[in-house]
Amino acid sequence: MLTDLQKEILDLKDEKNAILLAHNYQPGEIQEIADFLGDSLELCIKASEIEAKDLVVFCGVDFMAETAYILNPNKKIVIPDIEAECPMAHMLSSDEVKESKEKHPDAAVVLYVNSLVDAKAEADILCTSANALKIVESLNEDKILFGPDNNLANFVAKQTNKEIIPIPDGGHCYIHTMFHKGDTAFAKEKYPNAEIIVHPECNNEVQENADYVLSTGGMINHVKESDNNEFIIGTEIDLITRLNREIPDKNFYPLLDEAICKTMKLHSLEKVKNSLLNEKFEISVPEDVSKKSLNAVQRMIDVSK
Image (cartoon, rainbow, N blue to C red):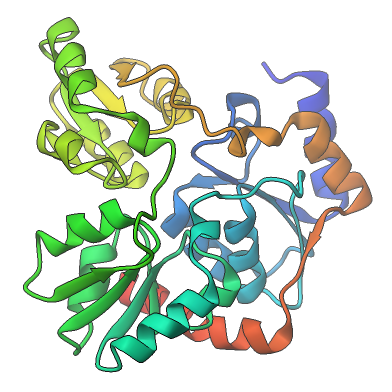
């Protein structure tokens, strides 16, 4: 049953000819009214397909809204809370990418979509956790500069013969590095029949103790198709909110209850309503940076389809 506020937002959305995009880590009350809910790759692809809408309300973090703008420069892109930033994306500057390219002129640059637009402009192609290996293998170069998530870089390095050079040193997601080997052991002891599924942004010791290492979209697909009925989920807590709603006949347990992305939770129904009503906070990217970034974004989408 929708609340009055949710109904108001849906009415406003129709009035404004708007689409509401939300990441899997958004709270349940926003998930319930989103036109599209997904991981970074799915949201990128959806953003590239938007045609009939005038206004895009993006419930995610800064780099996601920037990417939506790059793919839709003629549409108004707004984010309900302008402070919703991804700490990992801010760990890699465009200057550091340039310096790394100078040190390794024979390397291709693959940046995680979790990066800021100025850094994206220096990339050859982007990737997400869902397609990182596929993207790397699609390139002719044998040396790859890969950032900003070191754990994802190492995850790819274990599966390819190409040389993967992580940039910057120490780039990470503070949510996924909360998990430790002991957490997987404790969870398995508590739920012995459950599969452990973790995200490739997790530390290597956690990945090695999991049954599967998957993106959030990959997790959803896996649990839907699996014959198993119990799953320990090693990612941000609100993916379980979605799983419980969409797959109520299976049981999902968080690897850690504390795995909460504070910036993802800055959005609220009140802020979504304000964003629609006043068309704020608007996201834009300088034209020259947007055009340079578009090539890397579009190359990723083309390889991913």
